Image (cartoon, rainbow, N blue to C red; front, side, top):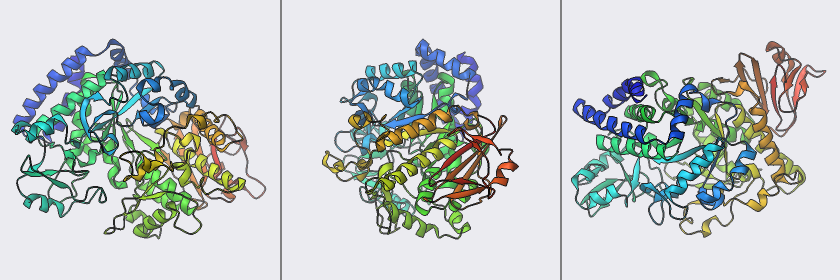
Length: 616
């Protein structure tokens, strides 16, 4: 079996490495990787080996319409890893089959960028348990049909990591794991074209280390040292870590900040061609040893760069299996603010199709801030100025814009570029905190359910951010916890309110209404093969700027989704239903048959949603 896999994935591995390293380096690295993958295959738990075989026979398992994701911080969701085992029934009630736990590998002490400054990839944070607890949790989830997703930070390690400590102690082998410059000449030349990622926290991209007597590349923080992927030893180290985590039961590795791993003078050092080669070679390593494992890229980049992380050109279908659909998330919030779908239709149509063997993660919120990735060309095509639209969205979601009920927080305002990102829970951005009447609450519930209907109706893997299903608002005490005061993203990372969750079945509460709405969307989605990820989501011609139509063409027939993003009644032409053969079709969400009214139109109430198929 190992030999067959080696033959099958050898070319992808070789071609990925050869695009990055010199021939002699490639030969040595390949020999090292064969030993690593053979050992990982030999040591793989029989239960995981069986999963490898199952998923080899069903490689599209993660594209299934039944798969629903959930993302959370382990400690904020359930206290520790053992506590999560006690909450599996809650996840199953939602229909979750994919659980992404935010960074839980051992970080540096003190500020750790939310856990993304990893000090040890082979240990779990002591407050969460042990590595054996992680293995036990992965096994318990697996028995319930839930795949465990963990973050793998590739671009940097904590300054306290063993590699960095060895480099400071004078070990040249490990010094070469990092970008270290004897003076500021080269760093200054790089800085001329490098954007500041976190200007408030860590201006600049280099930090002086007295122990190294040099300048170290530190894109995100002075204590997060960028790893040097031009060194093949770094590739081998991370390949070994991937195999170690896979054999612990991790089924999906989220490749954090992958866009940054290759540096090139004169560029912004993001999305370089070598990144795609690396993200071809790393999955090839896993497919040889443990093909049940998938890779998800976290690349919050411009829309036109997004599809490269699922494979374009020579890398088609050979890189990551899953990528975040950042553009869809941004456009959902844009539509809700403007009550107009024109820009969203333009932007989403402009994204090229992705390989049929891959899929998107669709989401409304995540642990991070929202950066307004609006393409200036898309904005100009519909008569908008991209920069000013971004400014409007920042004003709207921080509650500055007149009439806005949103209660987001401005994150990392950059006075040079005017960039202002936004923190805030979904419910707070939708206006729940500002709602002072039953009618206002109705509109907030409508916005949240509409937004999740778009997320779940697009295809791919829809992921719920912890607490969204309960309409959780911003944590008013977010700054009180040690290490959080300078990072307002903690406002939308409150601890799970299990008392609030106790009201999730009470339809007389906002929590109960939102929970029921999201659960109903998930249940209906799982009954519709039209939403299997290989069915591309199309946006047909708009009939009303307030209604986003989304069409899926499945062999069983079409699925037409209609989303009214406004707080007023809107209509969709009945003749458009007739064109698709959907006159008298069934709205899968309500069970109603859909016929045009006397005026020839189908009407949608404020924030109304229809998922129309030919039959129930």
